[in-house]
Length: 398
Image (cartoon, rainbow, N blue to C red; front, side):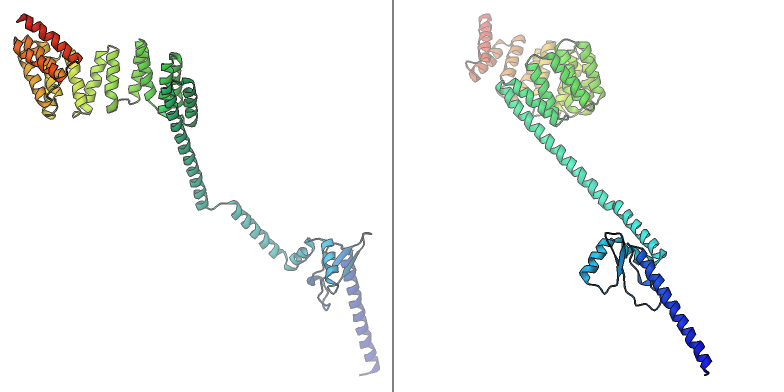
């Protein structure tokens, strides 16, 4: 190789080395111009050793860089001065826009999962809330019942004021406590507070519009006061609420009887017999109703059916004896009373009716025997005194 070519090659190498040195200087000056950034490995020119550079901000505002070869405590203090976002921003730049987009998408998904509760978790939470509410209701109902019991004890002791206060507390615990409403009205009736009693029924209706009982009780109150129109009004509403349960027929029919409304009384009793044809109470009430209204044949038929259905019960026989005695058929009346006494010997009331039937049928000695049996069974009683007076009258006639 000629000397001229060697000189040209050396000049080219010198020029390349100088350009590389200038490029490195420019890169370092750019790095030093940014006081809050960390130089990542991707920003270093090719061929430079891969070190991270941290910058320290001096009070004068100038920034100086240092390579990772510095003392760890010095580097840590400089990293704290620069701020926690420096290294992160360098790593984000190193990974590029695609990584940042994936990271944002993952963060949004995590936030969405955090805000959206699992359906099974929601059901469990709802179930827990319902259980807590149910326990609270049961606790309040138990307290309400206990307060009513205490109030009743105070009522028996005559402490009406304290009883009223406890009943009020009971209703505050449980507005659906029927017993509390009933005892409050009963207490006010005992105290002579009729207006307050009526107000309690009206408040009961307003608080529990699905409860039929206050309508019947208010009807009974108005009937007691002689306010028949108001009583019929609330009694009709009571029936409209379905107040025709088997246990309600007798009381409702009795209320119509108190109002002298025999037609409505008979309607209720007929419904009762139809709803409970095997009920002795319903059959007797229906038969008694017919007898009171002069339907003796129907009453006798009803009592005969009862006697067949209840062969060991003396009641139907005694009732048939009363009807025959009322009709003036004293022979048949004696037969019915004697049958009742076979089923229940020593019944003072039946013996007195038998004695009267015998005397009216012309059997004076038979009547004296019946009266004598009464005096022997209950000497010194009121029934025995009455039997003695009647026997004395018969003996004088004889």
